[in-house]
Image (cartoon, rainbow, N blue to C red; front, top):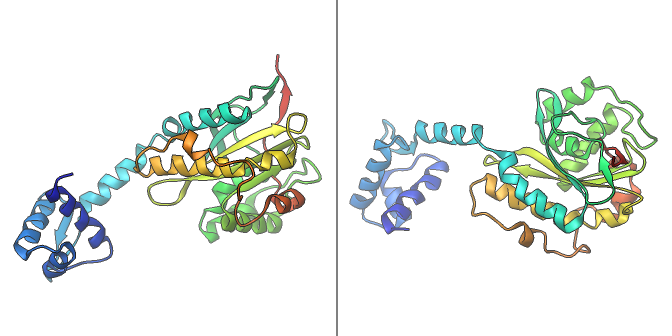
Amino acid sequence: MSQTVDRALTILPLLAEGPASLEQVATRLDVHKSTALRLLRTLHEHGLVYRQQDQRYRLGARLFALAQQAIETLDIRGIAHLHLAALNERTGHTVHLAVYEQGEVVYIDKVDSRYPVRMYSRIGRPVAITVAAVAKLLLADLPEPERRAVAESLEYPRYTARSTPDAAAFLAELARVREQGWATDLGGHEESINCVGAPLRGPDGRVCAAMSVSAPNVVVSAEELLRLAPQVRRVAEAISAELSGAAPVSSVTAGAVGAGGAVGAVGVVDAVGSTSDVAGPEREEPSV
């Protein structure tokens, strides 16, 4: 990168902190004020910087318009799919990708298990929102008033003894998921199906999608599946980095940590033993 471009780009995060004078910009860049002024004028001509009446500079409206356009045209599925496929290749289990749209959590991608059973889930179909791990991850990121309103508007079917019973329990679970940064599905929809999921974050840092790895008890125990949590979280972080415009991170590298690695704030034993972390929209049936 040329020095001029580098200096111009350095101005943008500086102004993101708040309006700055010409002298402040020059000081931060460690350049003469005439050099800083040339850079600011160029950015101003392109609408990326705006000079206020007090002669201080702030970020320009075109920068926000470009950012919004980038978010609106973001192809989450296209960016995530290779990572999901690589995780499926390493683990052999079903991998899902879901988003929250118009009050529903919907699958937008799926990579099937290599085992002789297939998930009943389908791309485009909504999940069981009160018990699904991906749903918890997406709803946990909502602002508190919206999160509470959604929880209180839902019905709570008792799919199994481990299903979320009511709004109060769901809100408590969403708070835990929000804090720990991952969610589990341990028989909340089908007693024999377990799942572990992680959130994907967009350029604004908000959760824009959620991914999960699911498997039946006949293939792998809940404890064994949860040992994949570090891999799932690292793949989610790699996808998030690409969604945010960072250099692509190989899914092989992202998932290379051993299965016994740290899971996060809540340990595997706690996750397996707690009914409050249960969720599971998926259902297994024999392949035909």
